Length: 237
Image 1 (cartoon, rainbow, N blue to C red):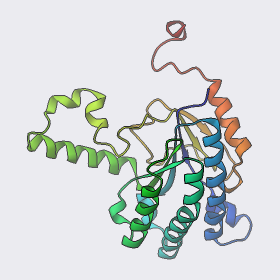
Image 2: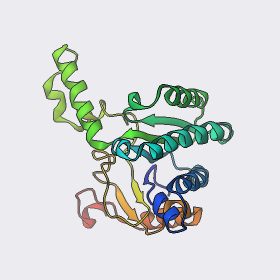
Image 3: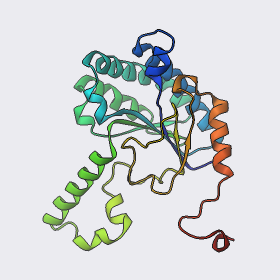
């Protein structure tokens, strides 16, 4: 049975390009091809949500030329893929501090989201200008504003649901599986609340080389694990 929600840290684009004597931007361009094939595979497998760490808040600190190239690449790629997303019944969403995106880029991406809003299959979530700490700070601020305005009470935070409704992923299930390509063993400020009980799968394969077969291998690995959520194996049985 496939996981309902898979999140991926798409790492290794720059190193893939560097290992081939190429400019880092070419690695990002090659990574877009991987996004397409993994999205298609996830849709075929019946996965409900696929969340891709596309651009973190920390990525704004990269050289401006690389940031500009990434922004342009993301927008062009999504616009190009939107007809196929619709054809394959894939709905597009974004999470993150999108107010930091250039106005034109944000408007063009929001247009693509609107065009896929009627789709009922896989939900492809792009984490853009996103970080887990930003999201938690934002959730705390929104909750405090609601308490101050009398729209919420402090006791609501005694349950997980009290915070979750203020997260950018509100309404989505938590990731069952977190995949990281590129070999690094860290979560890099990604979905910090949501991955509390996610299974984690790390591969040394750089994102541009990550194939459908690699993705299916990760799913099979996930299916072979026992998810106990703090219980014992005996309790689950």
